[in-house]
Amino acid sequence: MVEQNTNLLLEVALDLANSLNNENRFDRLLTSIRKAIRCDAVVLLGLHQQVLTPLAIQGLSPDTIGRRFLLSEHPRLQQLCQSSGPHRFAADSDLPDPYDGLLLSRSGDLPVHSCMGLPLYSDDQIIGLLTIDSLEPNAFDHISDKTLELMAALSAATLKSAFEMTKLALSAQHARQLVEELTQEALLRDGGELIGQSPAMQALRKDIQLVASSDFTVLVQGETGVGKELVARTLHQLSPRKTAPLVHLNCASLPESLAEAELFGHARGAFTGAEKERPGKFLLADGGSIFLDEVGELPLSIQAKLLRVLQSGEIQPVGKDEVQKVNVRIIAATNRDLQQEVELGRFRADLYHRLAVYPLTVSPLRDRQQDVLLLAGYFLEQISRKLGIRQLKLAADAADALLSYNWPGNVRELEHVLSRAALKAAGQNGRAGIVSISAALLELSQTNLPRLPIVMSAERELETNLKTATDNFQRTLILQTLERTHGNWAEAARCLQQDRANLTRLAKRLGISVQKQILY
Image 1 (cartoon, one colour):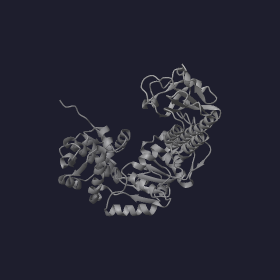
Image 2 (tube, rainbow, N blue to C red):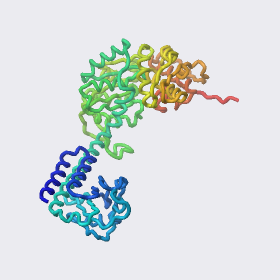
Image 3 (tube, rainbow, N blue to C red):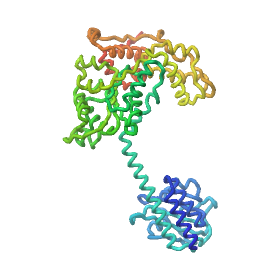
Image 4 (cartoon, one colour):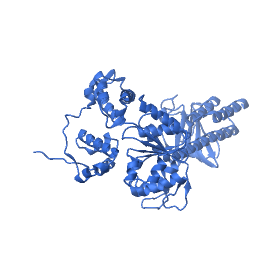
């Protein structure tokens, strides 16, 4: 008897020490108990607000794990929860058994059998139960109360440890939630690596390698859709800050009234709707990097406050008097010519010089045509996995069409064109074999599309010579996209991967409008 009890305690202790996760820990606990005590079923239950939830079962039907036992409906379980120590029920007890009909080793009602339970306590509070059942009457009479008490203590420690680990995991998850949605997009968006062998891409890689190891502020310049976010992601991953957060913020999507709070945080009650204190993006990125996309869209009032962060590393949340220090590397991106914006008075010169410590320029796809097919191969492999296509390839005429196209939407447009074409090809040919994309499916020729009367105001036409080359490109790209989508702003915004409201505001600034006519 002593040897059996010693083995029992050793098994449970080893379970507590060696288990890796809750499921594993609970299963080992029950296995150890069944090895030491001959029984037909053993169940570990957690108690919360008068409801017992099975956490692990052995010897009962699988659906037991999904059941919830209200103490008020199960007098046996209620009696166990009211016990201060191990409790054995009489073999002929008339109290209904909660596991009646659930034993794997027997179908139908339970006959006279052995049943006992161990209430599990932590800090004088009951946290669960361990129930043990045997079809053999009086099967547990020979086990001493002392042994069962020690078993209960070790089981309670196992359960308490699992609960604490769960709390810690939830706490860590809650903390990560503040940055998770901000970092996820920046880390995964626009692919996983810089693809291309053109001289422009080789030079860009060298520059990234050079500046990544420093803490210099980097300004990434380039047209819409060239992959500026991917450059920022690569910079962060190659930097000493790679294990810290990379927080992404689209400056164009910030209303001026809320931009300061988004960047620097706010106190509770700082403004209408500020029901609780909230950290800003700079505080979330502390120790890591922040990617300020479309930084050229920031209002002048916010630019001055951003300059303070660059100069001193200090932020002041809205509604707070104290100043907080942050250690954040800034990576900014823009599709505007910020030097021209400075000359036009739309961007602060001092902020521009602080941001452009190390400028990087991402060339448009039309200037690196030799990279088109490399990028196409990369995207086709991704698309085939997403769509469940065994093999996806380009027909010869499709490759020629890709190489001859001007790509006003750059890499982003290439990805979208291939995605649409692959979906159409799979619809025509199925997904089990080799799916070939033809030039016709790419739909790159726009010559046959009806043109809508898209006009620019006379005032805007007079200002054309004052606009930057970037503005001219944006205007051309938006016009082409609106033509391709028959003037549908929502579809055009999706093609350009822009928020619809932001796109219409930008179009209005560029003097673009769509006039739809009713024909009879």
